[in-house]
Image (cartoon, rainbow, N blue to C red; front, side, top):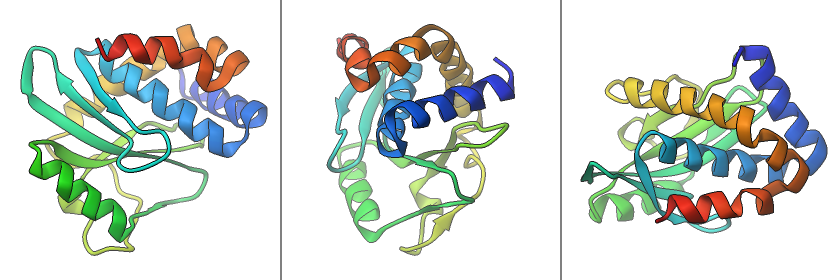
Length: 171
């Protein structure tokens, strides 16, 4: 998918469902993108706490917990609460961080490790953390494929349209 087409999908989600729901739709599509590259969705939290946890099916010891953020601005805010919740997930064996996407031409998901998110109240506007570039590349390619196949479903039915797919990603 080219950059312009990806951007148009994100804009259309916002126009149809509003910015808040768009962010949740993009979170769900990101979760499904991880599932397409071999991860199992362990937990999804749409409203409270770190947004989702995943583990690699081929190596369940490879586990990640992400706070997903969508912005139209140049950065996203990191809150003390985010860092505290990430610390808790890290204590359970997860690598933690932010997954962020800016709604703009050329947008791609970036994955930022928790260690890059200090001190609190930092605004993140950097790229993917070293060591996570390959993972980010794979998940972005998968995300683009999902926009083509599930974008129409998400546009028409919002979060509910993706629920069955998310449930299957947990199996």
